[in-house]
Image (cartoon, rainbow, N blue to C red):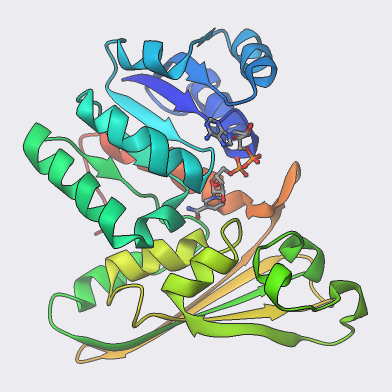
Length: 268
Ligand SMILES: NC(=O)c1ccc[n+]([C@@H]2O[C@H](COP(=O)([O-])OP(=O)(O)OC[C@H]3O[C@@H](n4cnc5c(N)ncnc54)[C@H](O)[C@@H]3O)[C@@H](O)[C@H]2O)c1
């Protein structure tokens, strides 16, 4: 499988290493990063080629992986689909914007393409998708993070909370996934994937807890419906280079690549 990568950061590095170590049957043809210098260094390290995004679109590729930012999803993914490329989206938070989601959906239908959205740092999307065949009544994502990993979120421009003063677990935010993703764009992409697999970004509830007593990012899902009750909990180790990103999120991208390339598909 011939791949291009947008975003040469933490997730991009973990994906490139997996390809280099032949954990996936794929070749990293070319890379792009908004910071050209970073992209060029990355290309050298992983024996690939740095290209401008317009030139990436001219390549013969099986898949373009976005591991950059919600802004990259908004500006680059529709162009990739117009150029008839399949895509994988890590910054899934961008997809709670209905206009963008519909544009992407129309382009995939028209050009017979695939958009892959890995599960990220949560477990249970398989059960949510199955349950959604009949009816899910409610879905809640409880995300517990060390206060430091929430730093810099747009939420704090509006609400003045001093994260250094938090001495006990504190609910920082409670509301619909649609808003959570906007206020914490680098922290709760999973709220978007959970919404898209289930009952949508307005009905899916999110609670964000700043907890000074933990080192991992803990994500719990609780869903109820005609199928019964689903509860999952993952205690994620943060990635060494970016504490906002759970290691499992990057691994889920690699697992998705394996799912695309391997003939036997296990799991829903
Ligand atoms: N789906 C999930 O579960 C999940 C989990 C963790 C992170 N993420 C998201 O995945 C993305 C990558 O995460 P990361 O930890 O690798 O981040 P990172 O900051 O380590 O790396 C991102 C890289 O992308 C580049 N970049 C940013 N905007 C760009 C653009 N418009 N065009 C090209 N390059 C651009 C940056 O320069 C940087 O090199 C982030 O948006 C993050 O929020 C998703």
